[in-house]
Image (cartoon, rainbow, N blue to C red; front, side):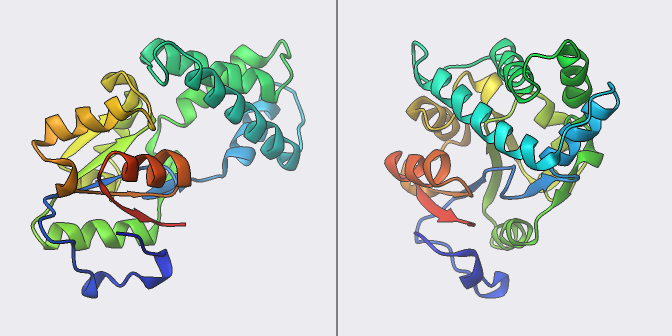
Length: 222
């Protein structure tokens, strides 16, 4: 199942035949950073006396994020992870964004705390509407994200994340999307077969292509 966000009307959505669960990616699907990542990084740097342009931060962040994705892809086994790796991943991204400045550790600690707070996120209407439609149809709803355990605390305090029946964070599963093991773990914990699950996500590779490869139904929001 594929559809564009513009084609979705919550009142008219009908799930595929035999569907039992809808699994939602989180960042970019149900919530987004507020302020944006470049703005949050610039503010954290400013608190340490560093002035950086959000536009420059945006470009450097994108490059650093891609580099860490490549590191995870080259791991043995690929895309395996844990709590320590997730912290190291984000520490490396922050260090690269700010060119290994001495203030990097303090900026990282600031940002780690920031993105672990409810106030750093705002809901996205499309994902929220689809989750409500899934719940109204009696389907199980779950979150499945390349996030660490901070997601559990956030999910319990902000809508629509708090509506989910289960929360799956990559660092506690031990795998990041697009690893097949990530999807198999979610299936086991939900007690569902691949064809009984719909994945809703915004990333064409980590969500849509990986979900389809796992045998799930998929719905892209971007």
